[in-house]
Image (cartoon, rainbow, N blue to C red; front, side, top):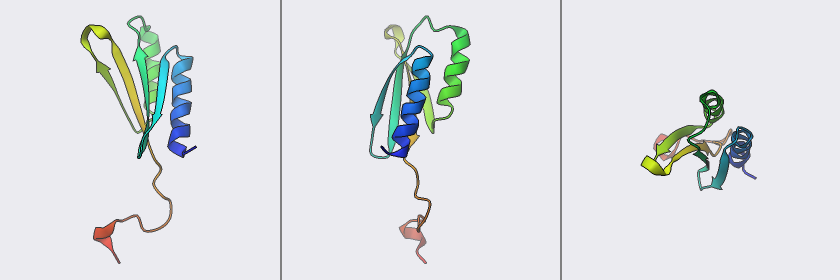
Length: 92
């Protein structure tokens, strides 16, 4: 399992423990987590939810009028720790 997928699974488990139903989906360069946010989510729970998604590389909230809200987060694939990662424009 790639590191990003493991981090995403951990975040999803923590969101599930707060009462949200989550979906985790791996992509080429990141792993995404989505959760439907119920209207009845207590105000106190929002702080905990935000603490969890703040550990992701990106996150946001989609509001779709009367049909609900979807919380999303993305965890990027790890950048290699060794080797030349400067790219083709920065050759030695």
